[in-house]
Length: 149
Image 1 (cartoon, rainbow, N blue to C red):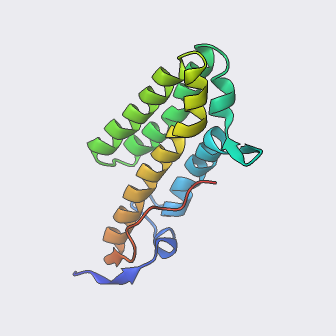
Image 2: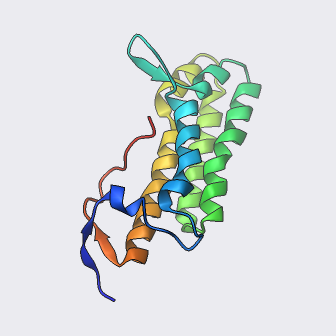
Image 3: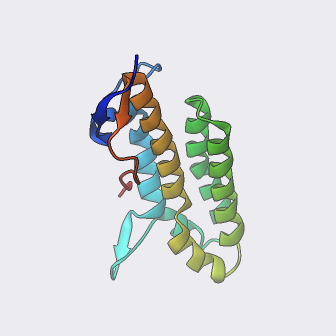
């Protein structure tokens, strides 16, 4: 079966995957977690999340957000995404935790790096590509997926 007409990302989110769930259902919890950790709050126009707040607690805060952020890696492995996606997620998490652990500089870094949003986008991009392949269509716009908040 060849590729049919282009499908929007919104349509691809409704495609039922081999897991029996839609791409949207697979991404729902990860989207909420990425938003909580990276952009749940806003002060004077600057968005930040629980990751930046937890990072204010030396070592323990970064360890907690590293473990919590591991949900993207678990999701990626569970969905059998390509190994390079797992690797990129792990690099983002380790970079966030490692640089975030540096006093003061790391706290500022946590406000802007947003590793959890990056990881969500990685998983979402590959899920949408899988949904398009499964549906036998091509993606209309393989651009940046929607941000989790």
